[in-house]
Amino acid sequence: MGVQEALKWFDDHHRSKGFRYSMTDRYGGYGYDCSSSQYYALIAGGVLPKGTPIGNTETLFKLKGKYLDEIYSYKDVRPGDIFIRGGEGTSAGAGGHTGMFYKKDGIVHSNYTNDGISYNDISTIDYYLDRQRSWNERYFRPRYPNTSRPSVSKPKTKSGGKKFIKEEHWTAWTQCAVNVRADASTDSAIVASYPMGAPINYDSVYEADGYRWISYIGDSSGKRRYIAYRRLSGDTRPWLTF
Image (tube, rainbow, N blue to C red; front, top):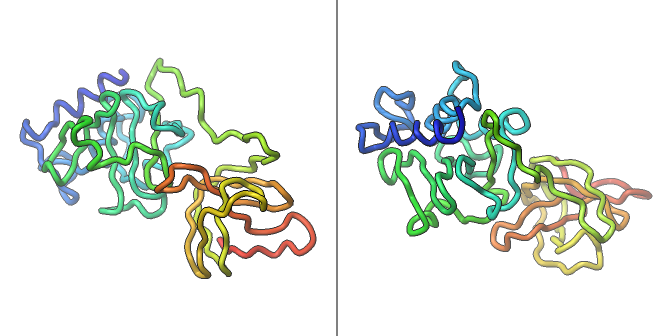
């Protein structure tokens, strides 16, 4: 079992074969939604054990580290990898979407627009994907049997004195106006700001320049951004809550 079997499952349950899109009857009697089809394909490919409960996009996120490895750049995506749209913690129901890459710049997925499982290539893929990793769009490589795992699985500490502390997909709330910087330094350019009471979804934590920072990939820029939320010494009271 492997990538080909997972992709074959999608082909065998294509809309042209009578299966429709449904979020309520999603177990094959009438059809599938995006996440149920993803689960069935991963079972067919040998990634998930037979009998695994059919979950949703939120439970797909929870498979990271055991059945899925995260890919941190769209350019590294290959056939058999999956995408999940919608931020972790906010992707349930109509807030999220998922599917599988059958080729570079080509996805197969169950979707409302096509009323079932369809293939979308470079001519239509931009309707569904930004093709740029962000908090809202992430990529994962299933652990297919006898298939090597990705060489990159975590953000790496870059030069400039940043210390990577941990990966943490969470939401912070501002207790005052805060600046967003291009790097984890108070000398770095301010590229945006959040007002008091705003939510910030982030994916990792760093220490640098005497501060603890949260970090995320900007939705519009595709670049990593940093927000200091407390000092490392002296008055260490944070100006974000979590």
